[in-house]
Length: 245
Image (cartoon, rainbow, N blue to C red; front, side, top):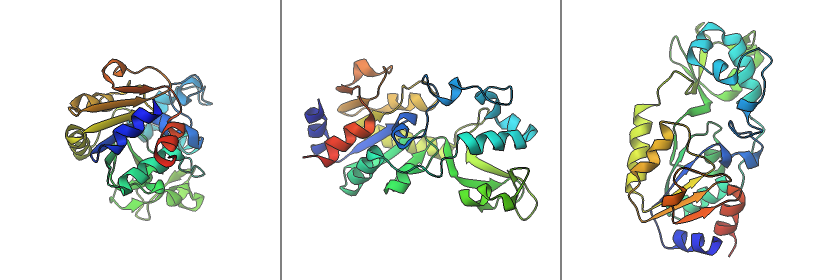
C-alpha cells in the first residue's frame, strides 16, 4: 500500500492535499470529535465547547471565550510533525501545488509550506474589531496587552482571532481558491479528517482528477471512491512515503 502511494506521488506533479485535525494530533494538538477530542471534554464554565467557540458568545462574554481559547485552541509549543514536513518537501519538489487545511495552528507554514489555504483561519492572525489593525499571536497572549485576559488594540478596540467561529461564514476568496486547486489537481490526498465538517468537507467532491488517496484512522464518506485508503497515522505514512527510499 505504501509502495502504491509512493508510485502515485512519483508520477504526479499536480497534487493537492486536503487535511483536518488528524494532521496535527501527532504534534500533540488534540482533535475535536474523537473519544479524546476537545468536544468530548467537559468545560469548567458549564457550557459546551461549541457554545463557547461561537461568534455571538465571543462578543457577549469575551473573557470566558479567551480563557477557553487560549487554554485549548492555542498551542504555541507545538512543532510540525512528519506529515507537515513531508508535504512541505513535496511542494519544494514541485509536486504538491497546494495544501487546503481545516486546521488553525499554522504548522504547515512552520514546516515550510508556501501555498496553504486555511479554511477556518489561523490563531497566528488577529485583528482589532475597531480599527482593523493586525496582530500576531504573541501580542494577544501577552497579558500586558490584555484586560482580564482579553487583548485590546492601542486604539482601545477589542482584538478578535482570525478564526472562523460557529455562526461565521468561511472566507469567500479562500473558498474559491481551495475549490480551484482541488478542481485542477491530478491527485488529491485527503488526510487526518473524517469529512464530517461542512461546508469544507464538501469541497473534495469538486475533484475530477485521476487518483484519490485517503489517509485516516477512521472511515470517511469517500473511502469507496478512493484508489488508495490507508488506516494509519498520517505523519507515519507520509514520513515513510516521502523520506524513506
